[in-house]
Length: 255
Image (cartoon, rainbow, N blue to C red; front, side):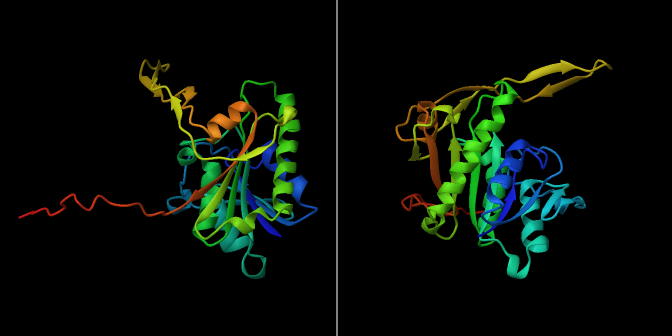
């Protein structure tokens, strides 16, 4: 399989490098990832307003001065043109979960979604690890998550994706792996705290660093399963039409 890998933690992050090392002997892998961290940037395209700079780190491994969606566009339109067009855009492994409405903030999910926009199957992969946990544990968790991705691909999980669909995979700390579940999206609750500070010139500035509070207890959701120790796989359908309230009169006279 031809795989384009990106992420939002940056090209030097452990997650993407361990994913690459796990898959490169089994698949034709190209890595195109941001030069620096682009977490929570959502579906941004920095290349519209700023030039994109590229640094080749090694064969089929590139650092790009853009966001995850820029990286995927560079991969599809430049590095993987023609016969090397990928079968899959794989985004991750993200440090921290992307659960519930996180998918709208997540640069990780945006990377996979950008591939789907261009007719390439997509999967976002995140490790829902506590960010305060000792860093020496991260790599073992990334390796287990990368092996789970490898096994899912071996099971031909991508055959169950239709047009304009992608997978969102989240894993809990996997030292005591309970299994993997199909999951719906839950909802996470974040604070509305605004942190105000004063700089050295006595001018105020602010951080919108919302902190996680809890999640709804919806059964069979990604949030609930992760809390119970299961990995979750959710199918996200893009551009899905919903029923409109046809009984509501939309006639508006602007004269």
